[in-house]
Structure formats: structure tokens, C-alpha cells
Length: 103
Image (tube, rainbow, N blue to C red; front, top):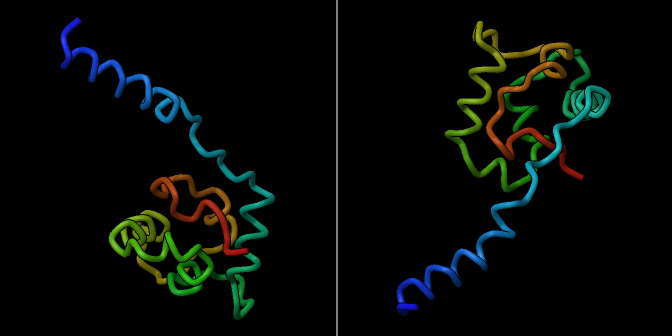
């Protein structure tokens, strides 16, 4: 067996377990509703972009482009806020954005 083929096989063997990891579980509606209540700091029943971002883990807050894109899909009418039902039913956030609230 040639050296390049052997190296490629070694990389494949090392990478295979990482590639086989399951996708993160989606939050159930009750967990998303609880996240909404926690994020709605002023308790007006509406979530602003600022409240939503502040409720995310620091690692998610760091990616402004992804947050902006997700918020645009969450608030397609550009009202500046979304209600609890829209938040709970929203499924279009990029991986790792909005999947869990800060501890």
C-alpha cells in the first residue's frame, strides 16, 4: 500500500467517529416556551431582537451575521418583535443559534 493511501485511510479512521455524531436535538415546544418567558425580560409578551440575543449563549452571540439572518426569518414582517407562538414554532435558525438559553 502506498504512503499517501495509508495516510488517507488514517485520516478517514480518525474523522469517521466525529462525522457520525448525531445532530443536536431540537428543543421541544415546552422548552422553547420556557426560553421565551425567560428571554422576555420586560414581560410584555413580545420578544425583541435584543432580548433574544441577550438570552443566547455567548458563543452564539458572537456570530452577528447568523443572528441577523435568523432574526430576519423570525420577524419577516420587520415589526421588531415576535410573539410567543411565533417563537415556539420557529424552526429556521442556523445550527447552534437559539437552540438553548443561557444557564
